[in-house]
Length: 244
Ligand SMILES: Nc1ncnc2c1ncn2[C@@H]1O[C@H](COP(=O)(O)OP(=O)(O)OP(=O)(O)O)[C@@H](O)[C@H]1O
Ligand SMILES: [Mg+2]
Image 1: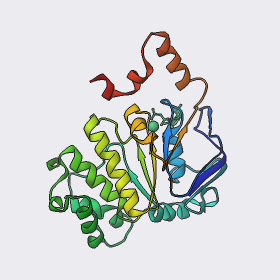
Image 2: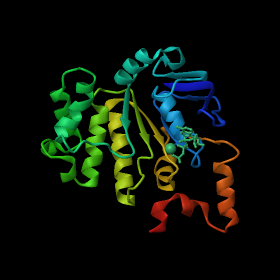
Image 3: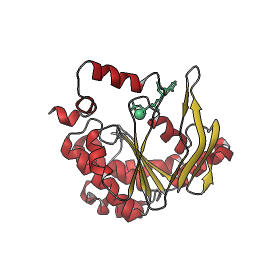
């Protein structure tokens, strides 16, 4: 489904972030772990074609991304990817139904109202279609963001830190939504998280492969050891839920 060889990325003026070669087996989801700065979001941006492959090879859903020009990458992204952003990015100027239609309209296509209705029903929020995002609870807004990501039947669903700013209950709820949707829609999940609650919830599943990014030797790792030196428990530091 996806994998890479010799993959590396360097931001202008920054050190190189190198990724060990990896291949995700079919019918498995990927949990990307690693300390802050280890390159999780960078890898998601590479997987979604938002960053060009500078070094190595990267294939996603049967396509070699390093061979695509920007225009082909845009078309590929629209047809293949769904993204659940960390801050849900729902537009309060639009209703729930309008938010679901927006990606298609932005791509110059007609809104697929049947698909929107199907997803809202599947996510149990059919009665919220005419509400505005500020009239939704946190959990309802999560469902809307997920429905929007699924509108174009993606083969790959990316979620960057889906539990950030969420309490324990909403974190588990979001993970269950993502896993249910992936199963129903036959798509592969890639979740980036350094949240101990996410790792605990997903790590024990047979269909989830965990990949720990090492990051550069001069940032995330040394921060962890500095914290250890201060006598703080690292798990406590990474997990907001464990502080409550
Ligand atoms: N736009 C950018 N320009 C320059 N450097 C960047 C940029 N984005 C990220 N970096 C650097 O690249 C490295 C990897 O960042 P990345 O955002 O991928 O880490 P992450 O694992 O997602 O971290 P976090 O858990 O904090 O979200 C970091 O050292 C970061 O400072
Ligand atoms: Mg990140």
